[in-house]
Length: 453
Ligand code: GDP
Ligand code: GDP
Picture (cartoon, rainbow, N blue to C red):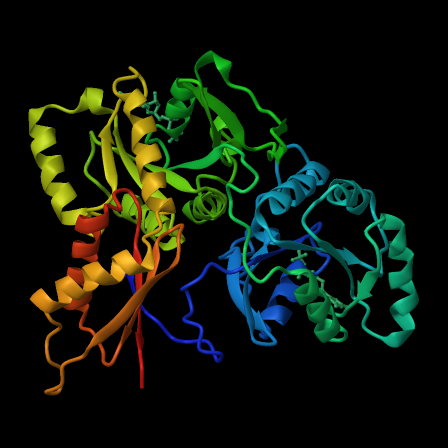
């Protein structure tokens, strides 16, 4: 729908507008079958949220919004991530690395009835050097009698094992209390560790993602694990372009051309979502030589939903003639109307044409994504706009917009305090004017309306 960037918000019980501020992230890691998704469901307060209709792919999402004791946070279920070709142990260690890089707290789940396996020990080794707090959950402790089994997990060197039965709920409240004790109130700023900015290359199969990565990386491509204090996941790739380093996230599938199950669109979409979770800006590739398809639009929706900055690269421009160009313009008007703010670049990954234009495009998009408008300036502008074009009457009453503030960046998120409902058309008008005034090219903008009763 055309409403995506306009979220009419609900409010959390404490009056905080949901979506106004980014939430801290809790990552659940551990090897398969220890009960990660059961624990996630327990945290979310429900029994069956897991979709198991496709063999080998058991999750339809990897992150969920949760709350406990009045605090909101995001839970990331790493169980949905692909076990890597390199083997289970490495895949689980990679999950842990990624969690250390992106989460604000981590829960390592171990099956206490089995005890610490070699994989558990490998992942514990990774997590022991984590600056992010780690809680050790000793799962499947279904009875008091079994609690001795939890104590054996002290051997992992991650401190006290917290006994829990994710399936039955035993100990879950205590575990959540411990988690909230270590989970910060606000998420860390992603550049606070000074690492390179993170880019996801997304698009349907065969649009040229691998070709573009190869072209950008040239012969200098390398997989580096430790740079400037940043932990880099083995599936990520650092690419230097014109002296500046970028982190291309989750490139494993692109490099190795894993075609096993990856032809499955559902599976590819999991991968895209995981990449978007980690990235700050997405380059969405569209094959300019062919009509824009539903599949392109589905990937676009995922980017929009993720709130990441966006650059659209129309690839295979070498195959575009005048006729096609004319058609494409019409398709863009029709299909991409929901993202008029996205930056667009026409490239050819195979010839290298205009590929260098991507860098200023992603830099500009990130600048918009990071932008913060001071409250005073925002309200001066708002007052003028509203005086010139007041909101339409509703039920004979004129809603008043009293005050606005930018509650968050990445993406820029505004909260408007009003005395009545603002129609969708008027909200879109305000977004348009806001974009004209402050320039958020390349970034989504969220505007939440809070109606005072
Ligand atoms: P994941 O692969 O780590 O996400 O594990 P799942 O959540 O899918 O759980 C794997 C299996 O362990 C399932 O059969 C669950 O029902 C079972 N399980 C999960 N938690 C518990 C628990 O606390 N007690 C017992 N007895 N079984 C559990
Ligand atoms: P991916 O599945 O998105 O990683 O796509 P690939 O990079 O594997 O490219 C799919 C096919 O499109 C390959 O045969 C590429 O050679 C071809 N291709 C990629 N970029 C271009 C381009 O700019 N022009 C042309 N003509 N072909 C391209």
